[in-house]
Image (cartoon, rainbow, N blue to C red; front, side):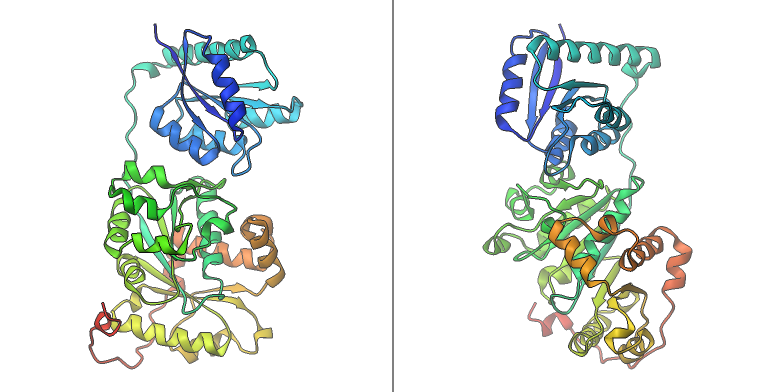
Length: 411
């Protein structure tokens, strides 16, 4: 007799254990896994392919509704039963719209739980028989040739991570693109904090595992409620030494075939790992600001990138732009000898409150001027004509004598 495979998803360990004990009395059911949050649930479902996922609706990292939506896209053969202490009609409607097959209210008895699982499973089996899905081979993942975007700035505090995370969320939110955000600021990366996520496994753990096959890489990723996937920076500065430039190259080569867009948030200096990211990038997004120290360093960085023959890949973005900064965009472009591709308007209060809440401002303040700037970036990446328009061939500036930049930096 085939046993119904069940995945339990609840952020409270005692609740998961109680449900497991209830199901131990059911001879035709088997608990194949547990998850304490949405990201872990998606990883477990992709690995275990359970028949039923028992999904708590209230979870801190990603609620059960959004997890159900993503599960329906990534593991459609798994049917979701939502568990909640709220029995109101509004919650039931939201759950069903997300793709859940049943909704049960806590606390429930073992008989109620087993009946719900059996009913949903039988209904799904009947549907498969009618559609002939039971004999249809799984559709292989669509091959992708991902575009790698490498975000870089000359100093901290100019908003590089803020722009990278907001752009990544905007690109992923529509559901049409598979987007991965990699935090390469290995000592003090903040991508997870900006997205209100708590990583259990990071790029340092992946590096120590020694396996860079995509199926293994997936188990180290976090999933944001937008659908964005994240490879987080190490949780402690000393763990950064576990990650090498060669490993970063292997990771980027491997994930490129599985995502439409891969965004790297680099440390703000030229070093071995950031240079590996810049080298493999299709586009290098330099983030600058309208103050003289930052502009001075940006000009130096552009000169270094020119020496590396990366100028054609550069997309220059001004963060916190505005006349109140005492200069205009055209003055910045003239000073740098390089065109400005994008601007994100100065909106300090919006940005600070969004960071403190762990909610990207593209979601918390979608009507803000800063959010408009992010949407323009996203359009440039998804609409080729707009990208061509935003990337005019800049006039030849003075060329630097050929030199080995890597040797200058000691690599």
